[in-house]
Image (tube, rainbow, N blue to C red; front, side, top):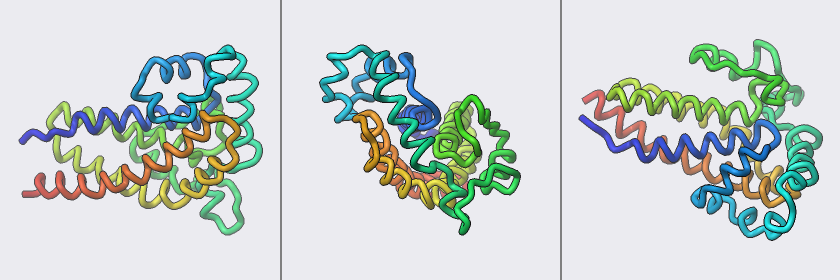
Length: 217
């Protein structure tokens, strides 16, 4: 039996790829050019799209004087974008083997390059979003192979990761980051991420039941 999930997975891959990259490390010209050249992506960032400074200043100036400053403020200096900070009573960042996501990452062969990603622990919001991106990519491969049992398993993992990890703490961080943001880019990115995580959880709640029940039938 074939399922019409290809359009959905493409959209989810695009969105998880975008928001994970925006929250993992500072933007560069390649990322901004990708956003600028895609009207669908621009539409997801309405304040950024309408920002007149995009058209009156150079991209490099905006990167060094606005975006990088905002990124450092939100993700390095003033806020703490790590799950363990929010769930531990002592509010310490757990960067060792007891980190709550390490076991799941290892089980699914997901490796984190901490230095390259500009993070100190694998439970950084950008890394957790990249994990969801990787799961979506794996789901796409399972769909292409018509492996619906594999699709069912991946939907369950994605649903569980949102429920037990990202949605436990990320909304509070994202609300604070939106409030503290100084550029339309990060204002919109944090707003988009929160809205997408909530809608994706609802989507996964429905799809896992539909697909898995048909697989079991």
